[in-house]
Amino acid sequence: MEIAGGYTLTEGDLKNTLHDGGNVGVGFIFMPSPYFPLGLRLEGSYSDFSHTRSALDEESAATGYSLHRGYTALYGGNVDAELDLPMGSRVREYVFGGVGWYRQQVNLRSVTNEQGLICSFYCVPVTFPVYSTVSRTTGPWLKSWNAGIGFEFAMANPASFFIEARYMRITQNQGNAQTVFVPLRVGIRF
Image 1: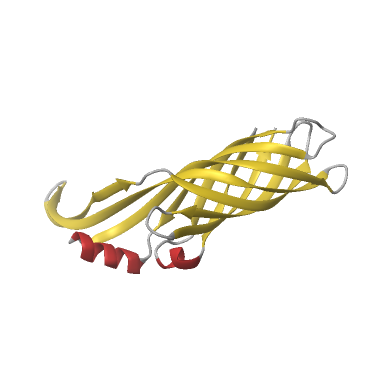
Image 2: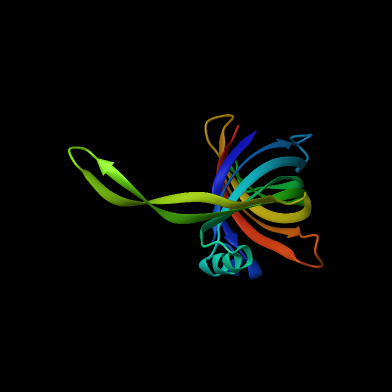
């Protein structure tokens, strides 16, 4: 079992809409034989990205609301093949790649200033920011593919520390639109 977290870099056209974000994941690796370096990897992950100001301005024009914040959550899983390349007794390099299915949820929030009073011994008029969700949409499950490389460092048996990077591409349903990003992760396997 593995538990990981890290940073996700947005790539291509996605950079105009979303800032880089964070990610977390959990996974399982099945190596059928200690003598054969090929195995199967099953992973689930969740990434969260905030929207750029230009994207919020476009979304404000489309919705008619003054949007303050927007974020996109991306969640799903991968089924990958993994090839281990030992580099020594306590270090190994590995490459992996496969397919996955992901879903995207977009949340848009507005802010309005409301008048109120704060009272103690006397009352003072104040303005409070009030945040509200304008829109929350969840898309369908989309196909993806990924490929990556990582390094694993043995610690106390059976735990190990790893660091990895992968290239992910999610195919959107409209035409040839692609969502491309690069998750960088560190984690523990046991």
